[in-house]
Length: 124
Image (tube, rainbow, N blue to C red; front, side):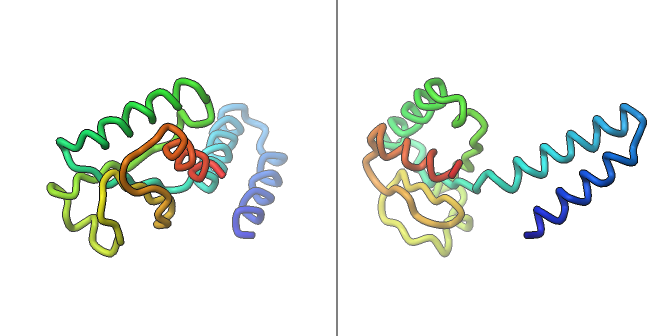
């Protein structure tokens, strides 16, 4: 609802602005606002030398090349040994583990299909 009110306000403001540069920046802000409200926060818990984590990165790269909708997904990669404080409060035993908006989507040995499910959840 808040997003709808912001968008309506921006549309009304665009009608009043006549200068091209101001319109461009307002339009850019409009797209940025839409993008940041659509994308979900993705966290990937890893260990540096984990072979399953390396396989997950490979699948992510492959899927991003295959599907343009996945290319703009930002994944926060958290090495649990180096950034232990960032893993507190998350319930998991195995890596890689993916959380989308703090909801666990995948844990453990990855398959291309399970990584695709994570990316789909991120854009849904």
